[in-house]
View 1: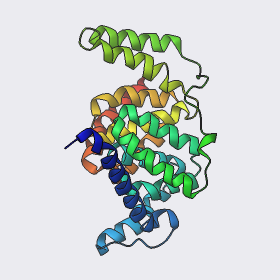
View 2: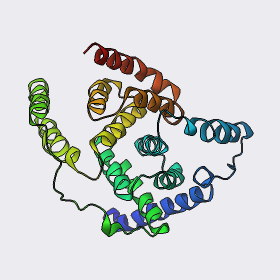
View 3: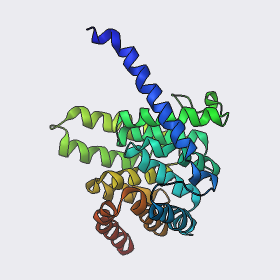
Length: 261
């Protein structure tokens, strides 16, 4: 059997399966439509409708827009494509711009993995098509970058190079060239929102070792302590209590150190 010749057919089947999955999810998209959630478990339906959507999403510490950013970041990070359609719709309804969703998914290609981002991109295409959003109006691949904080970036690059330059020079190179001097400077998603996406992805993936740097960066970029704390509340429901409890000591330490300084 010629596996190479059969590859396009397999890819077509996978794409078809993804679209069928999307259609099923769209039919159950009650969270973004304000309808009663249809679920097998009465208790799960109750917690979803009354606690999660009726209470948590209404809390004042974090705007619905920011809650959408956190939630979509978690779903992409955990490859939960079935849940994406209603939450992408909710994000758009909450004020997240199409270009910001596209940039969010692009950002997560680097922080959650390429396959997860490309899977999410397929769902995003379908959501945009349903809403008649013209993808031609999204930010192009090459854009004029935001200003770079030369001193802070030099310090970060030197620290990483000293610690890991001889371990994995390729990783160090692309961390500087692709991430911090390219991706992070794209204007389609504000630095504060990129940081919120990144911190959410790290907590969802259980990567607490990376949270200290990125939470400090988020707060330097304008995320308040109240917003960061409330993001943890949102993350508890979408990334799970264990991941959030693992991250809380790091958040606590970052908050305490910033109060001292």
